[in-house]
Length: 206
Image (cartoon, rainbow, N blue to C red; front, top):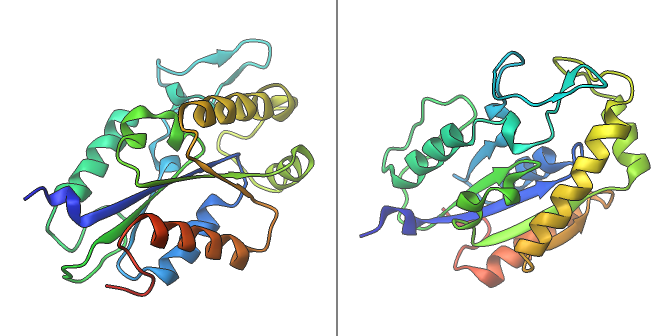
């Protein structure tokens, strides 16, 4: 039996600071024993030779897949999907107890739906979007390491976000686009409804 068949996988993509991780955590309340993996945990180091430099800013472009170790993330995803163990050594995995019902794997990241290997695993795909003004407001309210340089949001973050969205939606027209400025309870309800309609997974199931 294919061990991956016991998992329902959803891809939760979206603009930077659109609320993906907050939403994923709320989904954990609806689906006990779900596992949440964040693409942000796979950024390369600032001095990695694979990084692409934005020359006029003297700053790496952190908004492209080239800034992420996606091979390592895929290895970890496959390890989860193929494992029958109930505890993972990775701090960002949630522990769960034995259960014969399907489990939910939430893949959260700004470029999750731009990685074909991840898309091929997804039973449902979501894109969480916000307006330019709201995205900028939220971005400026957070700290990054390395910190954003002046002009980085306007010249890199936002344009790359729009390009990534356009590409991912064109490749995955079944993606459900959500407004990240809506109330969180409304967003959770919309996603849960899609999951329950598309799969045999029900909220509050094992």
